[in-house]
Length: 308
Image (tube, rainbow, N blue to C red):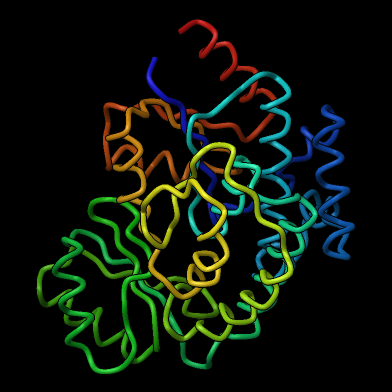
């Protein structure tokens, strides 16, 4: 078997009840939720496990998703599961930071709580995002650059699926041009702000101030930065990359291709849903993607890897 990567999904994958079975069956997972609650001042277990309106609000979604991802990670590590590299989509990159042991978990939970708040506060009136299906990234970049106003690529998810972001009028104008240029579909996303656009630079600056007081370690295993789609192997660039990440494009397809080129043939998605697995099928069908959303999933993954 080649190398193993742990990968972590981002906002939009959240579901009520996520992580509950880990909380109930693994003391180490309960400790994670308790620590997240202490660091954020929220009852994170209640936020994750019950039907509530807050779970889909950015400032709450981010701490809830990270707590769930880290709880699954810690349970998997306790079972002996190990990764050679790791990465995460947008807020999922903080799950990768936990896997790489870059900073104390209490600091990580504090940061993601503040990140969610700053992004919520920074939503300019009139921001928007649209998924563009069936068009090459290079052509989308050209049309965004030619469109008046602020519009750019938010996510390079996989071949045939790119997300654009920015001022709503500019996003809508770019979408019309993209359809005229041959895009199969342009689907407006139900989000309350322009994630990963220049309009969120203020949120990144506030996050940089929070990061200034946090101690960062050399990653125990390499993780791939959303901003650069390259490995981070030292402590020095971590803070600057995380502050830039809020307003930079998420280079997910490029990140996955980097890991595959480096010998990764097994990707283990840790968190709710199978979003990243769906992207993976379009990036490279020859690699294996496993999912850990429940305790049962973890047991299946351990059995499958144990037989390799």
